[in-house]
Length: 347
Image: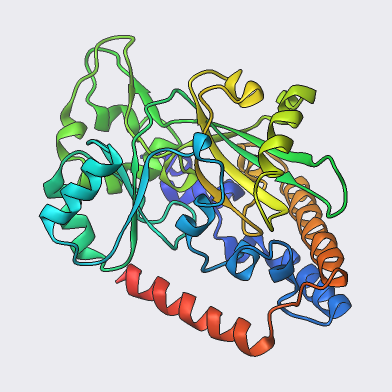
């Protein structure tokens, strides 16, 4: 393998694959400045008073989904650890959720442990391995997936869409001769997922797609799982703004949203038709359009700084209106709990 095609070189020369701890170094200094201005390290908690920590870390995804108008949410249930099989199947039946389905931790980030489950055996095995609360959600085999970052300034009637990300699932195009593994080796994005696929999708690796056939090899639309992100801000128009403004106005005590959306057609993002939110994030939702391949690192830093300026502005206004910042003691306690939780899941 040539050096330039090695996973190490690809990650080194494409900042979109860098660790967030490296990417966020300049943002950390800005965060400290904003903390000094607000006299609170946890000022961001006031950005979304209706979510724990404002949605920056440790919040329950299910608690946020419950705030969203039901017509925009896929069929979803929360399962406690060690739920017995008969009860699990009964809960799925009552919710009218069939296999395949999506399983993800109720507390998590960046697609961690989000998996498509094809049967009860694989689901039970997954739940037993990670004894925490899990969300089970109907699998929406929709062609179009987006991230939409939207915010409302308290007291203003109309919000702003500051970021749209178009997601393109990881696929291979068959030549009638090469296996999926061989096709993945020829692509700079999928080659980064190759070792994971060899362990998790052994049978898929040996398939030989027909010439010209496009095969989606990753069902989860996450950048860390090989999904390509593209800047879709050019899609924003008045109709889309009205749709998201109408939705956001129905959600109490939230002002900053990152909607992880699916729809059957691109137009659904504007009209709301067939629009579903598989997840809604708060202050922790990034402007993910910055992860488009070739996007300038300095532009990305600028977009992240702008996002934090909005978080600060919204938090400050809410604080003046009587919303308390999370105390130092409470904030540190929640951080410790969150880090312990992440460590527990990574074992």
